[in-house]
Length: 111
Ligand SMILES: [Zn+2]
Image (cartoon, rainbow, N blue to C red; front, side, top):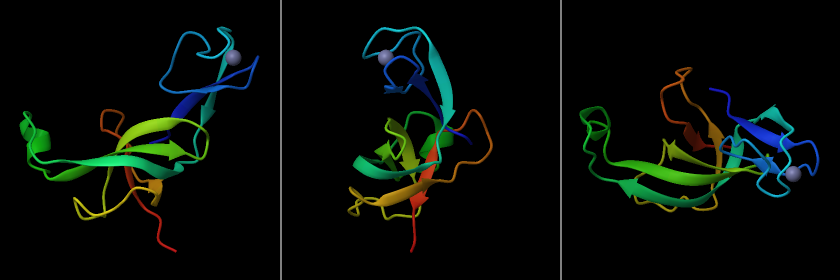
C-alpha cells in the first residue's frame, strides 16, 4: 500500500497525517506525495492483547513509530522481528498488503 503524505508548496514542510493546512506556515496549498516506504524505527512497543478478535489472534505483535526517509513519522506494525527484541534504529521497509483498511506493515531491510 502506498503511503501518501502532503508537502506544502509554500514552505516545503512535509505533513502526515493529512491536514487541511500546513502545520508550519498555515498555507492551504498542499501537494500529495508518495513515500518510497523506507525508514528507521524511532520507537516501538509490543501489543500483547487486544479487545478485537481480529487483532488478538495476531498478538503479540510489534507497533512502531517509523521516521520515513521522506521526512514524516508514521505509526505502523513491524513484522519479522521478535516481540521485545531491540528494533529502535532498525532500517525498515513497507510491506503492507494492498488493502486500504489494513494498518501499514513494515519489515526489516536485510542487506
Ligand atoms: Zn508551509
